Image (cartoon, rainbow, N blue to C red; front, side, top):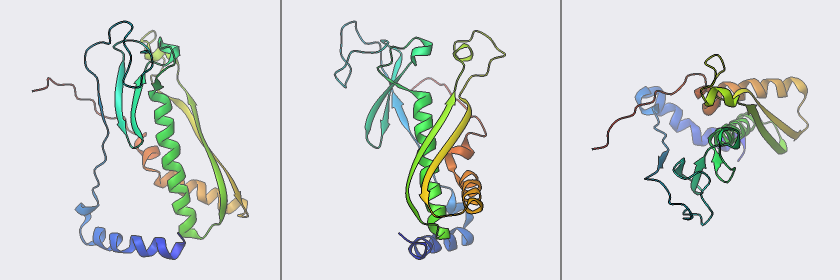
Length: 184
């Protein structure tokens, strides 16, 4: 897709959203579930041994169900996806798509890109050991190594614009509201 085709695809949407701002409100969602505890020696839907019985959640995703569980730093065996890693995956996916969209719109040629999202969490916060230790991934940096002829100023502007328009990155600025209620 080139800049012309991207603008051509987006222009009717832009016009619609200018005429009706409420139409731009776009729902996104994810679902997960768990039920009961796995019996000792039972297998998971993936056929592997359970990581920590009863401390997993099956997340429905585009590529199929992913079983999330405890990170080894918090008592998991490492057989299940860590939610922090899943967060980094969502972030790097969003940065990649946003960066490519911005580059396309600006006519910046990129032969290839490798993106990496990295951060860390202090397990003491997650384990409730110290209220002064933050809970969550901190120090997050997304690095995009590009094969391009673009100059440094163009790459700086590309980074700034990508950061501004990355939905996942911007969503991390405000914590989600968690609602727990009885099913029924």
